[in-house]
Image (cartoon, rainbow, N blue to C red; front, side):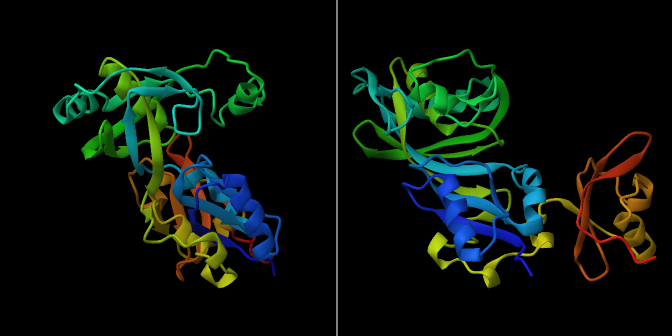
Length: 293
């Protein structure tokens, strides 16, 4: 039987997210592997990887807030907004002190529109932006709504270099925040040493190195959906779910917005349901087999 579950990987620097997927396909012996929430090659930290049936749940894995640490380097801007790019501008920012950095960081929190960097995985007209950037092209990008819950400046780790911690919504580019911080301080900046420390409730404490991952170390589909509101259904409800039927939200016994992880009495994940119309919920992903006739 093919393996199925969630791998919480601590991605090393120098690996693309696709490199991790390719490695795990070989380690786990299955082609059905995919990741949620791309990490830049230079970045490290939490990467959620779905295996088998959990690949169908990937879009629900990146819904929660994300946490990052990193270092903002003042005085130098780069083409990629991080340390991997070419220098595009320099400024003398030696007069900027920690108080000014914290004040500027506080102003960058909250709901905002952010333009994705050219070196990113966002699709524009069927092409990823980083593919266009490698061809020397720059295209217009639509701003995207994001939320920066916290942008904490912990201190100066070297002259002009500040350790930061960020809590933000999915889709937020921390290197764009670093560049915006430099601009707000009257110069420029780039990001270094980006590390994702958490996606939702999955943190680096849950993560394992790629080379240490085994089939036995995969988390169950129910564990993969632990950040969704869980609803346990009885045998009749499980049968309805197995047939992919819509259910009344009132039947689920919840008033939340969804999506919901529907579990059977043994705690096994049957499906993920989302709010529909007229007080109903519809299945987005059904893992349960239809009951025998």
